[in-house]
Image 1 (cartoon, one colour):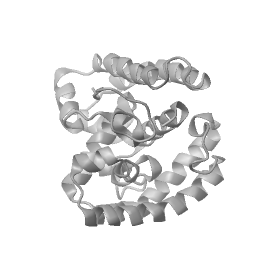
Image 2: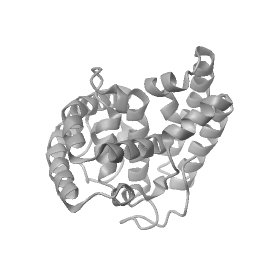
Image 3: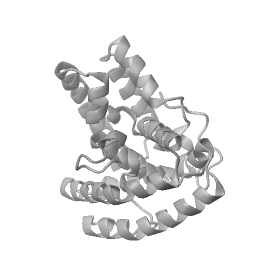
Amino acid sequence: MSRLSYFGVAALIAGLVVTTSISAQGRGRGGFGMGGGQGGLLMLARSEAVQKEIGITDDQKAKLTALQDEFQKDSQKVRTDAGLPEAGAGGGGFQNLTEEQRTKFMDGMRKLAETYNPKLKEALKPEQVERIQQIAYQAAGAQAYSNPDVVKALDITNEQQEKIATISKDFQEKRQALFAGGGAGGGREAFTKLQEEQSAEIGKVLNKEQAEKWTKMKGKAFDTTTLFGGGRGGRGGRPGGDKKAD
């Protein structure tokens, strides 16, 4: 996976997990945790590393493949409407959209999630869906703290939210600078480092009880650099090392 492609995937996952999650299904905002379009569980379920992690059967894999093919056709229209190039066209994409285009794209993908949520649930076992949600939280990095369901689960106060927002804004500017440089500042490693630094800063805002709850919500550490050929054992990418999510 190219640096720009990796950035696009990472940004998309982070962006969708901000506003939706597994428990958001049925509340009118789609459900990142239950398939959330190209940035949701369906996207993660395409990863060989994730499939190995959740132990899917051949029958489940066949169902997922058919579901992904169906979804790809629908998601292409959302991409086109938002001004993105066709999937697989290469080059930049999501990170180069205007704010208006980005919002239109994210809203379109969330609407698709409302259609594909039940279908994904039918293809996987509840515990498999739950594990992918945990991986999704890890892949989203520090931006997951902006998820309304995460805020509620951790009982994050308004004061804490303000502090987290300030930290996030600072690091968002740093990520945008990295995107603008096409990854020249260190590529995936630099992006991952920024995520780690941001998570560390936000971690200081949480109290002990909140930190323990968050650790439980994320589940056991998963090497997110293996997603979509981004790390060791992946296809099309250079070795990613043994980096685990915080």
